[in-house]
Every structure is written in C-alpha cells, then in structure tokens.
Amino acid sequence: MLVYLRYLLAAPFLLTAVVGVPTGYKVLSSYLYRREVRDGTFDWAGEFRDSFTQIAVLWPTALAVVLFTVFWWMTTAWPKIALVPSVPALFGGLIYGLLDGWEHAAAGAAAPVVAFGLAWIAARIVVRPVSGSVRRSAVEVAVGLRGGGRLRIQSRRLLLDRLPAPLHPMSPVGRVALRFDRIRGVEAGVVRTPAQWRLANTSELTITPGPVLRIIGCGQEWLLPVDDADGTARIVSERSRVRATPDPRPPLDSGRWFHAKLLWGLAGQEPPVRNTQKVNHGNRWAALLISALTTPMALYSAYRLFTDGWSYLVGVLVFGVIAWVATHVWFRQGIVYKLTEENPVSPSVDDPDPRRIPVTGWSPQPVTLGQMSDS
Picture 1 (tube, rainbow, N blue to C red):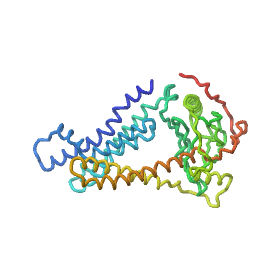
Picture 2: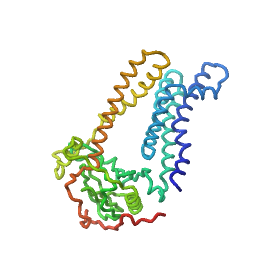
Picture 3: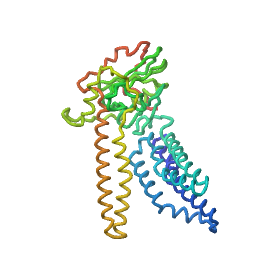
Picture 4: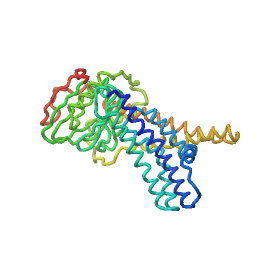
C-alpha cells in the first residue's frame, strides 16, 4: 500500500486523538457539572462548539497540530505529541475530581490514555507492515533490540536510542547516529555465543545468541541484536540507496564540535568508575518546555493587543523575548547534540575492516547495498 494511503487511514485516529479527546473531555466535564447542579437540559452540540473557544482546548490543540505538521515523518513521537492537548484535561479532571467527585478524575485520567493509544495505532497503520513504499519513504521505522535499545530508521539517518547508560560518566550523548551517505557496509548475520558490544558513546549492548545486524560507516561499527536481521538490513539498504544525501560537516575548528571532541578523547579509555546514570540533556528540554509555555502566551497577548488595547504590548514583548531566547537555545543545542551523535568518532579515523570478525561466534550473511527487491 502506498504511504499516502496509509496516512489517509491514520488521519481519523490522529484527528480524534488531538481534537476529539480534549473536546470530548470538555463536553463530558460540562455535562457532569450540569447534572450535579440539575441545570436543565444539556445542549450537546452547543457545548461541543463552545469547547473550541476554551483556551485549555484551543492552544494545546493548535500546538499539537503544529508539532504533527513538523514531525509528520517521526512516527515514534506521535503518541507523545498526542498527549499535549490531553495534559490540561488530566490536571483539570484531577482538580475537579477533588471538588466534585470521582467521575471528573476518571474522565481526566482517561483522556491521555485514549489519546496516546489512538496515536500509537495511527503510527502502526503508517509503518506496518513494512512494504516497498515504506522502505523507500521518509517515514520513520523503529526496530527494537533484544535486551533493550531501539534502532530508528529515519529519513536521512539511522539513530540508536534507549541505550544503556554510557559507561564513561563524561560521555556527552546517550544516543549515536549514522547518516545514510556514510554507510559503507550492511551485514545480516548470526552470533552463537553471548558477547558485549561497546558503541562509540561508550554505551554497551549485550549481544545474545541469535540474528544480528552489522553496520559499518563513519568510523563506527554497530552490532545490533535484532530478531529480523534480514528484514531490517533490507530496509536500511534500500533506504540508504534511495534517500542518502551528502551533508557537509562544519570545519573542525567550529565551536559546534565541542561535545564531539570531548567524546573523541574518551576513545579507548576505561572509566575509573562505571557510570550508571542516563545522560542528562535537561537544559535543552527545559528550554523547549519554556518555549512551549511562553509562545502561546505571546500569541494570546498579541491577539488581545488588537481587541483590548495597547496594554497587552507588555505581554507580547516579555513572553515573546522569553520564547525566542528559549527556542534559540533549544535549536542551537540540538545542532550540537545532533553533530555529536552523528560523529561520535573523529572524521580522521578509518572505517573498521568489514572482513574482521567482530565477536566470537559471528557468522555473516552479506547484504549488498542497492540490490534489494522493490516488492
């Protein structure tokens, strides 16, 4: 099935998750309140229309729509984005539940669960089963690793996340990535004995006996325990052939290499004490949260500026400046972290020899890039 048809099938689930769930909660909350005070006949249609003018519904829904528009290809993020309009419903339900009864709390608690589930179903519709059109498209395909971790096959690169904590406490990134244009080899093989495999960011994977995917490029070598190594190799190979585009790196004297150079210095070092904590990128995500909170305030102040007077200009300026600074910090740090993830090894380092046996018990099954079937 063509990818755009999958999006059409998934659209009702996304629309219900982003618009229907918060609106439905608002209507249900009004109904429960009217029933408790015995306030005459309830106008379902009128309440449904009025709910769209509520700030608690309008702004989070608008933000979620913008996020879905930007991250239309990142299916792993869809369930999280769908939570944005449902979080106010959750807090509102808990507050009303303390005052007016458990029905409000139950409705509020159900909202994010339903929204998350609907968005997850929408993502599955778009991605599974993995057909030829999906392999060649920009849609993100996520593959779980045995024992933990995840391989995300994205539009222009491969990304490993949910990895064990880096062994070295100085490692600046908890993820590693590999762009398609820098992949030099893909092999689907088998490992017959347990082994440990250390990635360039010092995270260590436990390789259990079974199918394994080997990927070499950009000085990195990945050995990934995936159950469907052949199928995953097929996706990586075909998407690499179709979607690889050159991405020039900045000069090595650029300040963007600060974290990457710190990571290169850890190569071959054994940490004095093994780290057990996840990498903390809290500053970057705190900036995103501040931006998400202040941007709607700035927009609302701009709206009131034209309807209620110039006094709201103060809100436009204050919230606008804070939103701009927070967004700038988030964006700039994102560039630095992405460069580090994609270059955890110095560009001067040669690619590992694909003829070398990576671990004891390894048996390769070569997959040649660009030779996959289109079926």
